[in-house]
Length: 242
Image (cartoon, rainbow, N blue to C red; front, side, top):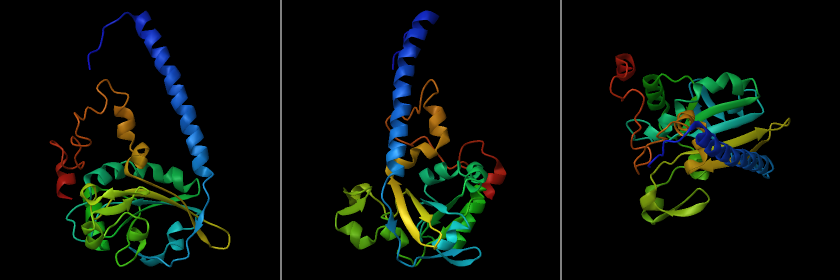
């Protein structure tokens, strides 16, 4: 993109015009957030079971004493050697939010189909602290449309992000974020799920890059520049060997 070099006065005029648009976007975001909160709920009657470091737990037990639960569907399949780079990029932003979320009655947990030992090993490599459990052997990932069987993929289409997409554009695992609430009777309700780029606002690095002079600077290859944080040149040796 070609940029003109202008006077401070001309820059201020352009900046004020952009500010008006930014305010529009903020108001629209507030409206969308209100509509999200107004969505109806669906009662979760199925008995899902998760494998955690402290034993097997139900979905209700993942709330950890709070009334709200956010689950990040992390792409790490049973036969994967490492977690998805994009999910890892997002996960780098989670730990710092945990004290704030927990003290605001929200528990955040990552869920993957990989066996717990594989999850724990990758979590140690990345140096993360957030709760991360396995749904291996459960229908959970399939029911929330973030995991797909070979037979489903072979049919040519899978249901993801609330529509059918071509299997060529999918994988056996895809990302998402789901929200749940538990009432005083212990009943669990599914309130929201978002997929694909729906979780992009969780990635603070993107929000900063969007305001940097060259933006995301992806040159047509979305996330092509991004690596797991221990794979960048010059990354600390301890992170690489963890």
